[in-house]
Length: 443
Length: 100
Image (cartoon, rainbow over all chains, first blue to last red; front, top):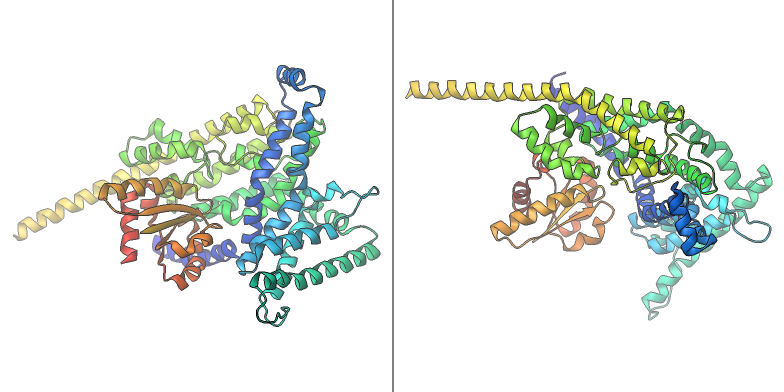
């Protein structure tokens, strides 16, 4: 296929599909919902990390200053953030979905959170079962948010289903009634549905969904196969200049976020970072694969500094270094460019796959602890490797090994790209000279 | 003139915003330029004059254009190379041309 035919294929076949996924309102609502709760997730994660930081001097110091119970601070922060992940996200997703229909987001969020609690088992001493408010309840949370927000907007945006107020009633009052009918219907439906499921299956909706859908899916996600497929899709999307992490976000968040939560909950309870169950998690990708951004372009920047002389590449490399340290790589992707650059296709796809395999096996064989903390994705490599592994230098070593490998593989390709661009320049120059000569002779 | 740049989280566009502001200042052009995350844009729809979409989220153009239509706000994807090389001047020129 010629370059033009290929471009056309992408524009007419691939782009619309990516566009539909990237702008599908339910997926967007799920992604934006997760984005909204991310600050709390990260705070909760850091609280646990500090509680379990593997430096005895630090632990002794904290005990000496704040007493034996100093860890309760981090513990309750965890309870108020990561531990109620599902309760938070149900409201956030419902908010975004309702807003996308121009319905009242706050009402939708509150109703959705209420609905979620309706479906959640209560403990014997009348406490909410924290198990289901956290990562284990995530699938129920996402489904609840989508269905309740859909029902809500049906009522909210339909004039027939609204309670009519006589004229002269202030709009604020009318508005407060607008949410009343949908709230009543949604909560009642949820109540009956809950009773029905418990009656038929003998367990709560949470237990049923977790055992039949979420747990098998998580087990499947925690394999090297699915990690490779995920990275591959992400790279292909980015190669075409599409925001892979954005498009795949809903999958990433709803599958790989619970895994890190379960790791971290166990880590908080004293299990070592080696003993926690899951290898492939969200921070696994962020810290060990997407260093400098998708495609580990930080390594590509190093490769440019090491072997390339062409001015354009060096300029782009310099420009990309500072954002690259924070895993932002649009200048590399579009400026070099990597996008639709036939020379860069192979390394850009292969390198992250190798890094994924490397990281997976390093952790599998116990050389590096599993990930037990989640950080902002903009956390620079080295720092991130140390922290996500629960404060282990082996995490940093893994990052350095992966970066070095990536740089070495990028080197021949970037040289090839440089040679191709020089050749093209010379051809253009030659063409210029002949056409100049032509012009001179004609004159 | 108010120019809005949109990308996934508003991170990489915020770098370009910096360069565009410098370019605008150099040309003595009165312009408010800001980067927004895709989810955040709708809160600013009313008071922007032109919307530029990052090439990595160019699939959002249709959706954004639909939302911008009632305000007659032009929406365009940022030139890929200008975006990559963070060429503030060129993108500013693109924005100015769209408002005419």
